[in-house]
Image (tube, rainbow, N blue to C red; front, side, top):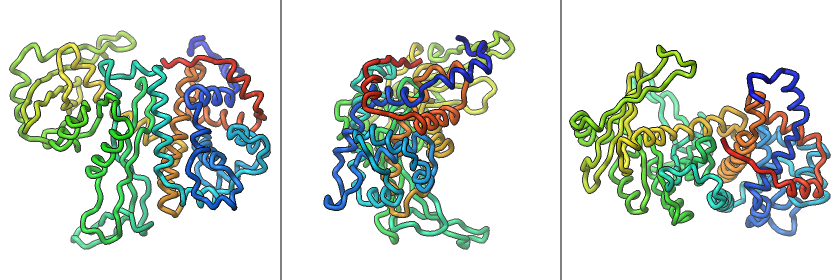
Length: 455
């Protein structure tokens, strides 16, 4: 059924007949089959004599809050009170008769004591399984390297100090006097790009001060080296191609990538390394076969709307102990070109694709941070006043958003009916809150072994 032929009545019928909860369970069983077991195995921080809720119940409740786009912990407790919801989360957690779901205070107290490394290990194991499935082999750059994009994001901001680990920024008046001090928390995030449409967290490094009176604050560059080492330790054999912004166009980053055997595609600006920029601009016009133009045809086949794209590249520009390759894209009627610096070889055959791979770094902003901040995940919301709990909320949001992306992108039905994202998750939430789940239903869904395909 083509999208343009779908009537409003047919849209309603497809939505009414669609069993969203069953599709979510299929996704969990196919792509995240070990999730509940991993949650159950978390090193429990509580006194074992006073446990009411098992690990997986507390953690899965919080993860599903993200999947269902529930925007606060108070609202989570208010909405997760129905008997059907309690039953369904109990069944997914492997508990036949769950009496109640944890209150948000219980969840926050648990997360305040939980070591963040426990959740980081879960994320790594989930990603490792996705890599091992072979489903996403087409995601690799040049059929070899997994693209990992890195960027920093703000997770909290206030006019008052939140905790001893807050970063600070002075806001000044025109005369230079301090108007006020802002207190905030940042995280440096790495996302694995899958088939160009999904970005899943593969590692997080929180940017934080050790104490309030530090002379030099922690920063994104320092966090990068800590994060890179964690990533290499967790995935020592993974062939990696980093997607980075111009902040990272520097010799220490090149050194680290060479040490780890990583490739990189970094957005390049003239001010990043002036000597390299000077050589590039001097050399890019000297070889005629290293400049070419492609025409992007307009969808409606109107020649006046065609767009020309001009590519230029230069290989082996020497900088300190490195030989760097640069590629440039100039798009018709756009003022500024896209320039990337890389240790991948560049040729006329692969230049256009390399630049497309480099521009994909914006996936972390669009599918990643923008979705998590502005489309229901509430990444910047203060879910807890406790700093350790804040970090664990962040990590659980990454798991929930991972699941939500699979639900959103795998179901081609939504491409047919052109339903906005928020509608998809409203339907999922409605179904989960109204359809009673059982272990038999889980077994029946598993036996169907439905195949999902990315397009």
